[in-house]
Image (cartoon, rainbow, N blue to C red):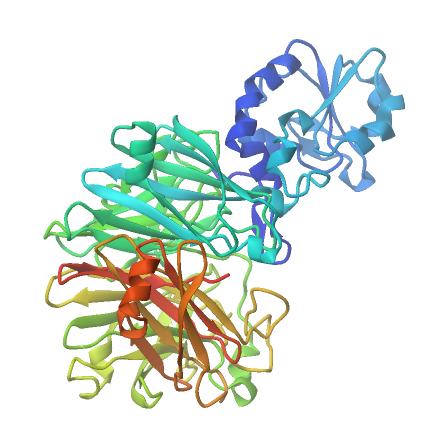
Length: 635
């Protein structure tokens, strides 16, 4: 059962209403708010169409409804809350003691209908649930994204596993004045374990929230739950981007993932089935205060319409570790799993427990239902060259296996017409593999060595691969091309994996908002990426790739900047990456030892280039025991 709420659309962006009514602080006011409405008949005035979403998140069955009234004539005669909508001009005849205006910033709306209130009726609104003004970037416009820069974090400090969120105060760089952060830690049942509000450090300063430190700060025992993070009074971005490292008391525990994406979606995909001897756990983080009912979340094999529904409830703001074999016991790698999420939770992480006792965490991706094949994509090669590119590292072959699994990521994708090209660090093509027109339910993986013909064989060099469309065998495309990349350490046995989608890179011509720009219109032709350092004794690694849909500058003009925890620049180094090539590096190879020591584990590096768009992967290395890897984020 999917929630009937708006969370995000690619046309309008994120929706703040569901965040406003589902914020933990607003939820605490709900019992008293609803109790005050339940002792007499109440009429609902719903001029902005929020009533249905409100009832999806909060149980209003105790209310004695005396009608639902609307303003727009096009909304007349609809079914809302079990009532047929009426014109607000009929409100004087309502047998209601109270009128609930289902809106925030309601003063103007109330003024318009005050003369229509039933005799003696009291008027109330959702403004009773507002957060304090000192938490808001724009108090006069409550439902703006900047007032709800929130995100969820899978947060655990138990069994020798710790989690560490790392980002930087990029909001002050956009003009935020005195931003703060409000955090609420909840256990697996959704109960609050701790909450706190801290001032953010200055512009560019690092932000680190470590589960071990939170546990010490609040005197907590072991916990596994989720951390709700709200950046107060931001500017520029309403998205809380972060990297999340999982590290352990044991050196073998290490993995990293991207931020959760704050908008719950209908479906997710890219979850791999287990290999023999493995267990794949999907972490379901309920993103709402209302429970996820049984039979509301399901799994199915990608390409199979038969869905197996979870017959368990997940508490409001709760967390459930779902062994995918509970629902799909016969699936095996490289088969893939589609997650029917019904907008109940944000982009989930999954954790794979291997037969040797090691584990790794990665994230699924949003599967879009609003796309359809675009016949223009096969035709644009004459103008946009490679077109859509999904680049990923090929790590040194003497140490690692680099594996690709193309992943359907839109409901319209009945096939994937793809090929893979390999390049060395200098941008020379060293291998190609045409995978053909793969069906939606394919189970085809490619190990990079299969297409390299001896290239990169000495184990001391690196390169990268690019997943692209290839229509040689027919097929359709929509531009939402994704893949999962798995890296296996041949010495330690440790594994890391990451997944992402294709974009166009480094072309002045644009197509459907590509090359994507995170600030302003397309094309995006510059780079700003964040490289996290900690925790000790781990060492950061970074693989930068310079993909180009069309020929671009022969080399990049990339500046690597080392920052202290307060954001101060401690050292800078310029590198030139060949167009179509890549660079695999560690901070100790670039920056002076004294500067790195001053930066410490809460320092970081920024990769900046104003001449081209780079794509990056980051991770941590813990000696010879473990490593982590994921795609980078920027701001």
